[in-house]
Length: 156
Image (tube, rainbow, N blue to C red):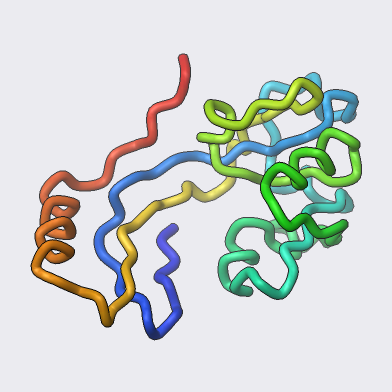
């Protein structure tokens, strides 16, 4: 599910990495015993309010306002940093869809991360300031195109 960057001053190159999504929940959540969840499980559960700094199209792609069947997904408190998001999740104030690499790089003892089996995959593309394109940037982009998209490795 590639969502092109919509800022006019940014140029977008090829997708180079892909990954799934997981739901960050408190260990005490009623969902904690499951092996995976659905986007429908977000209905009625507060999720992060990304605030005005996040582009609306990005927020909607990552944390939609409605489930696929139309169930509302309420917004909870805001977090200024990813670590604040983890504290809110651990406290049971919100749940949050996050990218799967979080399981490898951001662990918290009071948080469970469950695969969201029907969430769209996240695609990471090369992005740069359009006014700063140089021969080196073009060569880097060509390398990304030549290598193609690859899945982000997760722990086994």
